[in-house]
Image (cartoon, rainbow, N blue to C red; front, side, top):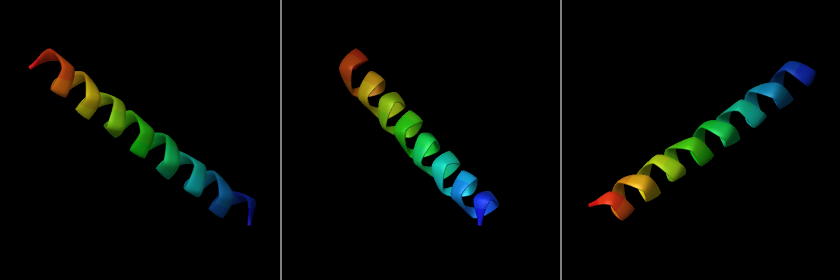
Length: 29
């Protein structure tokens, strides 16, 4: 159960990082 929770958190963090990358690219263009 704890392992699954950590996986969910990692997926959320990854999605946030991708959103930041897309935002940075859209701002710099």
